[in-house]
Image (cartoon, rainbow, N blue to C red):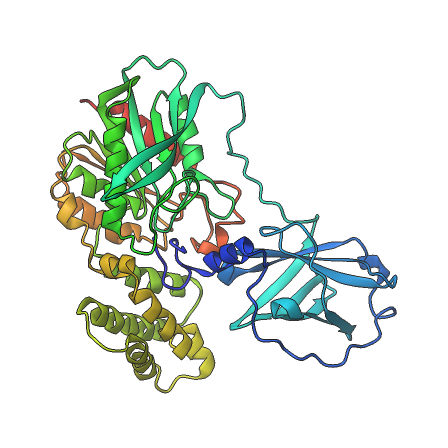
Length: 493
């Protein structure tokens, strides 16, 4: 679910920025060029013992790992080399650098990057500041075994005891046709009586595996379900992967229409029990599922994985509070940020005419009175933050999501519902949303599962912060997978 600062639609977070940069062939966005002090002689400054060694750091705001290593440059000097392994394997060599009195300075002019790090001999780490454009953050590089490579031990390995078929579905929308890339996974011994689920991803234009930071949760889920006798169909969202279609004007309602069309297509397929076809939705997909079930009686059941139960504006405000508090931001600053968001959301919801950029900057100034510059930045109350907020408020998706009330649809659902949340979910609060869902759905139809220690992606975690997602090897907790499969197979139609 979208985080206004780090976001899963993004998550419109810094991770989206890095995706665009990768697509453009750039490792980092070009920022302000920073002038360094004159470079010092190097050959005698760097220890030869560092040659071939590796260090790993993390830009948490972007969930982006960076490696530093040392090799010999064209002059035979031992020199630092930077790697961004999630974006490209090639080394990024500094345009200039210096090492003196245990202080390492690195500049990459073409990318607008500056790092000033201090070497700590007691633990062999480099610690300091990373700057690029408007981004300025602390970073620590610790010794590592080599180039960072995310381990994903749950990814399925052949041979598969099921049949996967890649499809291109053609849907007519008005006077246009859009293509929808999809994968149908059917257990090998399908006899026409097996249940099936449509997998609907979270916010942002996701591919069929709901791929994020090297994780492919929908692939893991489809594999597990097939091994337990349940078919599934997962698909690329509009404008993603093998799917076409307009993205700029997309809203949750449009995404729900796409998903319902695919669901209706599923109902016509052989080898599937038409009376046992349901929908599994994650995050925003967890509100799309009840939207469809509230109006389509062919939906046999729905599974809400971190699905919203409260209004979109409340989701985003709670999300911001929880994320900031988990990062250690003082509660008084969090309260100011929340008041700022409330004013922005009210202005957007009431369709106030005029310049939202100027209006939001005025809100930021009002709620940041008396704060220092560092505290303004911590609370997200800078002029830059206000401008970014105004840009988000102009999108059809955001304007609709602020007003979207899941209870309208949940009250109309007449099929079995499984609602699951991780206790450490900081993007869709388990306590708040499961309680809201419980108030709306007939208790005879509802099963609520609150899983301890899991985050928004249903990974075991420490804090629940999105910055952990990449470094966690687990993609989907086994107990969550087991709960979903057993619940579906236990439904009596």
